[in-house]
Amino acid sequence: MKFILNREIMETNESPSLHTLDFLRKNGIKGVKEGCHEGDCGACMVLVGELKDDKVIYKAINSCMLPLGKITGKHVVTIEGLNLEKLNPVQQAIVDEGGSQCGFCTPGFVVALMAYFMNENLINTDIITAIEGNICRCTGYKSILRAADSANRKIATLDYSKGRISALVSAEYLPSYFLEIPEMLKKIQIQPKLKKGTYIAGGTDLFVHRNIVIQDPVFLSELGFDKIWSDDNYIFVGAAADIESIRISNELNTLFDTASHLSNVSSLPIRQQATIGGNVVNASPIGDLTIYFLALDADIGLLLGEERRIIKLKDLFKGYKILDLEDGEILEWFRIKNEKRILSFEKVAKRMHMDIASVNSAFSMKYKDNKITEPHLSGGGIGPIPMYLEKTCQYLEDKEITADVVKEAARIADSEISPIDDVRGTARYKRLLLRQLIYAHFVKLVPELEDLL
Image 1 (tube, rainbow, N blue to C red):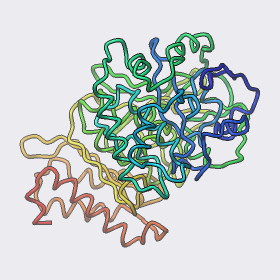
Image 2 (cartoon, one colour):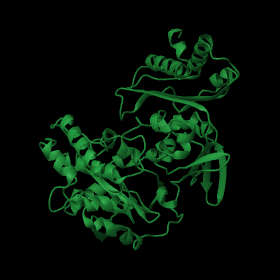
Image 3 (cartoon, rainbow, N blue to C red):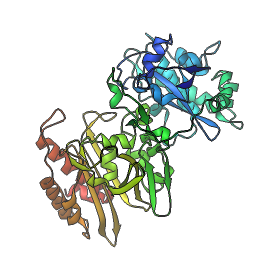
Image 4 (cartoon, rainbow, N blue to C red):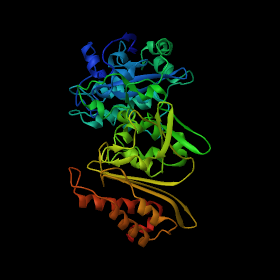
């Protein structure tokens, strides 16, 4: 494997499933810290730059869950690779505002903020979102936020006419070697090809396990399965498309408020690594992306060698962690109709941000002449699989929206589900949550229903 680490080309014969954090620290890069080792604290954060259309696009990624195989042909930047002879304006702002005490978390915060300033493509993303994947145990977040705001005000005054990276280098936010990276990356690119092995998407569930070793891993993003595209009839989402790319997708946001809907799904660094295909094939009964796309009546494309077949996403789940997949068959893409629909997504968890849902639900429909058509309702955490509530959808077809109709829909939905008591709540509690989420879907559309339900 070959990649660029800070300013040097690196080659290694280590296992592609070795965690990048472990590789870096083993090789003397100590600016990346080991905290939670499950993608929650941000102490191990690095920048990963990928060459796209002669430009390098950087993302902040937790190296504790990043296998070496996923950085092949890319640029990995640690805090050491950001350092200049003096503090850059982001680092200086943290010092000036008292944004660091023990300093353990500080490199991760600097990396996260630099990723935000280097990425011109983020939409509906504010400075707080940029550091939502970073935890500080001792400093207090107000001083860190003041530092972030201070750096943000300064960076807004730069001249970006020659490109964002060039502007940041000129203003001494970045070392000058960043200007050489595009040409360096071109020299180490390899042509992706479909091959045999263990297929892996984002790995955010798999690589939480510290000592996992995978023989012949094949990363779907390297095969071009990470694209989002559309034609007149459908929007296609590649199985290896990461959640953040889906959240900010122009194609999806033209039709729905996807950027807002998915903003509370994990933290930004995890959204930039976790994929829709992994979320679905993991087959968790509460997978957020699964529930979201069930309510859009998505189709999925399955690939086995040269053979392809298309089925409904709702037909993929046959039982708890049991899928309608042949041996060796892989999920290639999702598709939804390229048409406007009303779409609502609701999620209840023990904490509002970055938590696994107790119950989640999504609902889409068309609404014409005061009647519901083509309703699709899904729910998670209410059965052994992600649930598509077929009977409820059948009932809602061609109905006017009234309080009685919504109550009856909730009653029918309750008859379709089979929640259990677990650490996220009792079965009774989950039934109550689903009812309330169904009410919430309709109250968004008809606010006056709130007092009638």
